[in-house]
Length: 320
Ligand code: A3D
Image (cartoon, rainbow, N blue to C red; front, side, top):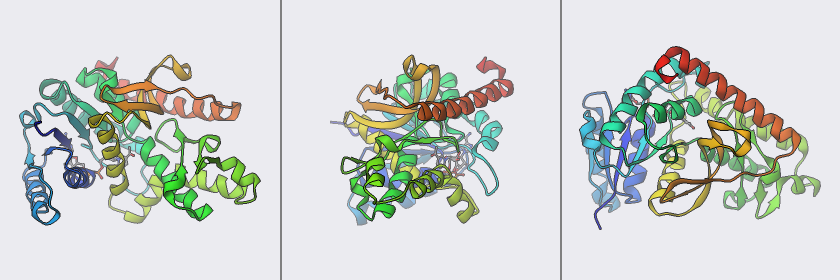
């Protein structure tokens, strides 16, 4: 069987980390694309030279030419600019929307059959714009945010309960912004709901509320510490989990930003919900029941995404 082809659009901090992880896992041959001349070629050469030490077989190349992504099975998009301290994800909108237009046209022409995972912020608006610009089917264009947000939630909960992160199954819904909705009633430690663990006296409502707040601001906490950019190890790891679910037809239920039609009362909006990821791409949106407070929180998050789409349409009327 021929090796799969993974194209990474944007060879910056996340792009380079994605290439390293994909190579170590031998997901396929890797093409790093960037507009910066020499940089993707240099990173590809450096990463290729990990092969003999790590013992992986993957051809890694760098390019500034979209023609080289032809035939890609998976495309992961990180092209654009990241946040600096004091910036919100939404501050990136104007610059990154133009980048999505260029990337969308590249995908339309050279990789129309790929499963596309967008990471560029502000995530929910950029993945929507990327789908619009590329014209690819909606079930093949998804956004990575929920896997990362859930991983952040799980990390903090494992610390609070003093248990292995492996036993925490965390659940986050909504847009990838400060209005995201970590859902404690569906978050469990070895099957025990967090709300029950609080009742059992293993934590307090105040401590869990503080963890929910920290999760919502989890990206900003790292931006403030790094000062030069945003998180990249965990975002890359999260996107690779989604790529593996597609390539290996794992049918994993992962929280991803997908176009939701009908479920959750939504009509074609891209927002973070649990989705079955398999060989068919985003195969099915899972609709869970929410209590009134959770519904209200999701509505706030959805409204924040809608406002971003209005701003996108003002900047680029072709998105009409
Ligand atoms: P960075 O290291 O700056 O890499 C971005 C790369 O994109 C740079 O190498 C640029 O040269 C390149 N680029 C710019 N314009 C284009 C273009 N038109 N075509 C191709 N390449 C281009 O950033 P990063 O890797 O740290 O972050 C990338 C994006 O991911 C940013 O928008 C971040 O805000 C976002 N991000 C999202 C999450 C989510 O959870 C959704 C988490 C962390 C970062």
